[in-house]
Amino acid sequence: MVVNLDWENIGFHYHKLPFRYISRWKDGKWDEGELSGDNQLSISESSPALHYGQQCFEGLKAYRTKKGNVQLFRVDENAKRLNNSAKRLLMPEVPVEKFIDACKQVVRANEEYVPPYESKATLYLRPLLIGIGDIIGVQPAQEYLFTVFATPVGNYFKGGLAPTNFVASFDYDRAAPFGTGATKVGGNYAASLLPGKYAKDNHFSDVIYLDPQTHTKIEEVGAANFFGITKNGEFITPKSPSILPSITKYSLLYLAEHRLGLKATEGDVFIDELDKFSEAGACGTGAIISPIGAIQLKDKKHVFYSEDEVGPITKKLYDELVGIQFGDVAAPEGWIFEV
Ligand code: PLP
Ligand code: COI
Image (cartoon, rainbow, N blue to C red; front, side, top):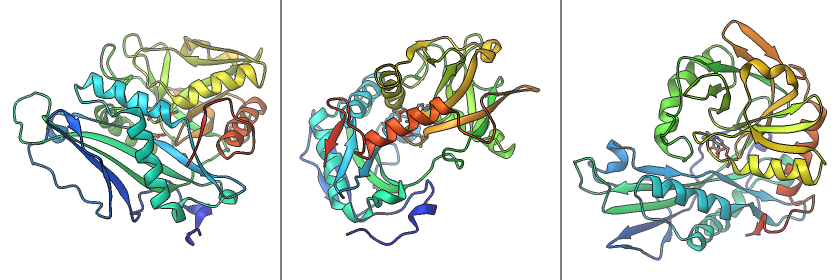
């Protein structure tokens, strides 16, 4: 059974669902973990997660298929990325099987909140790893919490498949050249709040960050990766050590090449060479594929395909990706996990 919510207008918000998973790491090992009805965490006021940002998180979705089954998309990749983030901040890894099991438990326990297939909304899962305990010096925690909660979501960017505009940031970076940009840690998002507010105040969907060393190349969007389709039909997405390795981006690189027959590469996207692209988009779990109508570069506006209409290749990529995620299109081996 599915609860009755206004699925078409659900947006991207937190809803308190009945259950979340929680597990504790102490004395060098994880406990069994359990489902909890309590959405409040009680932790020491001196927890390193609160003071020194010793935390990392993930984002993935559960999809209801036409037949009514529920499935996860590439959850093993989220587990691996969480562990890369954990290593960078000296946190214990969460075994991949434990991560996948936690996600499945949370989906099953809240199954009635997995949106109906027809709505194209999904159940967003937020795995979170935090350092806790009584520490005051700058050092890693001795104890950790791993939790996974869920909330039903629709579009992250309000346009959905309608293009929206983005603004390039020359004054602020989200990450440093040898910093934590490639990990999913809260500090990167904290750094993006102020430029993100400027962008939204000026009616842009989000910020496009440039490479922090030279500010000549596109790195990524505040909450998604960037891709462009060149006029001769090549799929290009930035390669950089300071962007988040997006699971959606790697999926699109594969689909562009193997399903659409395009050349697909990771490479430099110079801001003074945007003319070579006929289409562009933001991609990510939340963003799915959100077409970019135009990018504002200081006082110059660069329009890609159209500010009103999604481009044909972007639409094909969207249909392929979303078709796989909802079980309508055959998935490459290992991409789908039945719940
Ligand atoms: N880049 C940033 C900064 C993000 O927050 C996200 C969202 O997770 C992405 C890229 C896209 O990553 P993924 O496709 O794995 O969701
Ligand atoms: C995601 O797409 O999962 C993200 O993390 C983007 C944003 C909600 C932070």
